[in-house]
Every structure is written in C-alpha cells, then in structure tokens.
Length: 446
Ligand code: ADE
Image (cartoon, rainbow, N blue to C red; front, side, top):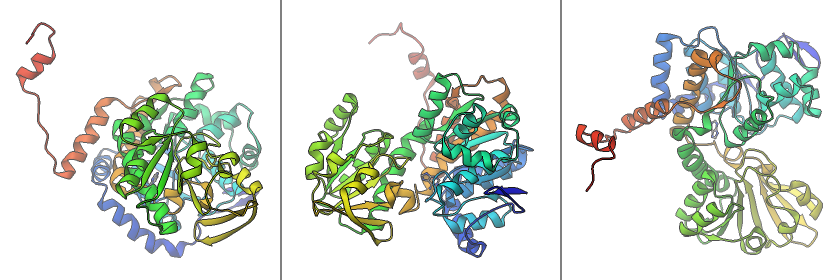
C-alpha cells in the first residue's frame, strides 16, 4: 500500500506504460553487453549473497545502465526500490521492464515536481537500510524531514509519508552518492554536523570521476546537443563554462569535432590548465558576445545570466550538463523574452524583446540524459561497479563508521580498474623485486 497525493493506492510500481517493457529489455540487454565488470560482480554477488535482506532505496537516472546495476544489487540479495534523480531523464521502456521484473520503480519521463517528490517519499517509506543517490535527493530530503526543516517539496514528501522518519534514519546503515554536486551537498551536511549516517562518495573513486565525468559527460553532452539540434559542430564557437572533469571532457570532445572552444572559469588553477591545454579562456561577458553554443558544467547557479543573454548573437544554443537546472538563469531568459515555443523535440525557441532568438535545450536540464541516453554503458560499468562495491562495503563495515563522508578504499578502485583492463584485453607490467626495493628506500642514489 502506498500513498499517492494523500490517497492510499495498492500498487508496487508506477511507470508510464508496462507495454513498453519489451523495448526496455532489449535496451538493458544491449547495456549489459558493454558492462563486463558489473557482470562479473553480479556473478560473484549471486554466489555469496552479500546483500541478503538489505533494502536499498535508489534515486538514480532510470536508464538501461541503471537497470544493470539494479539487477546486480538484486542478485546480491537486496530488495531495491528505484525512483529517478531528475524528472526528465527516465527511459520509460527501461522503467517498464524493471517494473515487470518486480522492481519497485516509481518513475516516468516528465514528472511534475509534485510527482517527483511523491516518488522520493516512496523511497523513504521503503525504510531503506541503504540510500543510493545521484544528486543527494533522498539523503537530503530524509535529513530535512528528520531535522524539521525544508521547503515546499519537503511538505509534499511529508504528506505522502507513512513511516516514522526517526526510525528510518536510525535504521539506515549508510548511503552512497554518485555525483560531484551530491557529494558537495553531503559534505556540507557533514560540516554542519547534521549528517546522521555514513555516506560513500562514489564520485571520489578514480575509476568513477576520471572516466564517467570526463569521457562520459564529454561524449554524451555532445551527443545530446547533436541529437536535439543536428547542428554542425565544426567551425562553431563552443563556450564551455567550468573546467572541472566534466568541462574538460566536453571541451575535449567539442574540439575533436572541430569547434573553436572557449572556456570560462572562476578558479585560477583550472583557468591556467585550460589555457595550457590550448583553449581560449575569458570571462562569460566576453564569451557571450562571440559564442554559438554555450554549455554549462560548473555545478553552480546562474552561470549564464540575463546580462550575458542580452549580449549574445541571434540564434545561439544554450545547454546545461550540470546536475541541476540552475546553471542557466531561466527566470531571466523568460523575463527577457516576448515569445517562446517548442521548435523541435528538446529545443525551445525564445524570442527576446530585442528580437534575437535563443535556443534552450532540454529545458536547461542535463542535456546528455534528456536529449540523449546519458553516459555510454562502458563508463557506467565502472561507476556502477563502484556503487555495487560501495553497498557491499557499507553492509560489511557501515555499523563501525561514524556519520561522515568516506571514499572507497583504493584497493577497490584498483580491483575495478584491473577487471576493466582485463575485459579490454589490455595487459600491464608488474614491478620487479628490484624496482620495489628501489621505491622502498631513500638510500640509493644515481
Ligand atoms: N548518469 C550519466 N549517465 C548515466 C547513465 N547512462 N545511467 C545512469 N546515470 C547516468
């Protein structure tokens, strides 16, 4: 029994259309083929059942890769409830396939804010031993409820709750967090000493951020922009806001397609790195005048503001690759516009009062997940292997851990890297005994 907008409803899932399941199964099969490390972990899990009896509430993008992770967790003996981590990123066919397999999934593409937080309430009602987040929505909502703070969205959750929040918090072993934005939030909770259980920052793993954030975001962001617009990237001035791992990946791939890439940054070290990587670096107010395509990947809000939009050329394309839809000031864009209409799937044309047109992709939400399929399965293989290992780690060690943010031990990272290399047929060298000795002493000279 669950509560839907305050009414009791007897369903164990809510998806767009169960008839889409067949297509979803095909997609999941396709993803599985490119996720060999997670397949191996699944095999191992299904023998040793390390997650037996563990309830996991996950808020992740509901994609074919997430489905492979969910299957892995269930193979390990866990019961999994899945809700989205973005209202627009759900692949409805995959959600239908998961529901048909018996997963408690509450997700469909185009959820309203109210639907979205109703789904988060279901994640809490499940009384999870482990919360798994991509963007910290379960963990932060649960803590807001526990601390009696929060805004309108927390009220939506409260109305749909049928559990005692303190009991849920006290029974939780721990949580995992997938993404940079979520980790920043949870570290703030730790700093304010309000975090109630340990959280593994999966994003800290080298086999996560060096690959997912860089190669995954790099390729899928360009993929999303191209699927949405079909514009030629060659010769365009592509402005990338933020030169973190995601920004680097995007800049690298845009350059590979022949764009003139401009970076905007607030961090002097990153700006210097971008300069020495051969990119032009300038403030947004200068880039705004010359860019053709703007991509935000900063994790911060209002990076593209009204003052920038007013300087832009006619026909510019705006896309966001950051977790939340806050990087482009949408309120300012609306205020500056006299008309707006959908001109293609995922492309909205804003006609400004000054007569210029601005094309906003994917409503300013994650363009790679809304207009394309998210990161390719090969990189999610490593990210989600980290998630699976993080859950196992919490089950084994969680009760001993203080309520803080932890990285996974380096040997788990190395284990995942080795399995990935093996799957790719790539061999590496080993240190000789002599080399090990050399590294272990400071006495030897030239
Ligand atoms: N985040 C980025 N890409 C993703 C994908 N393909 N599946 C789940 N989460 C993602």
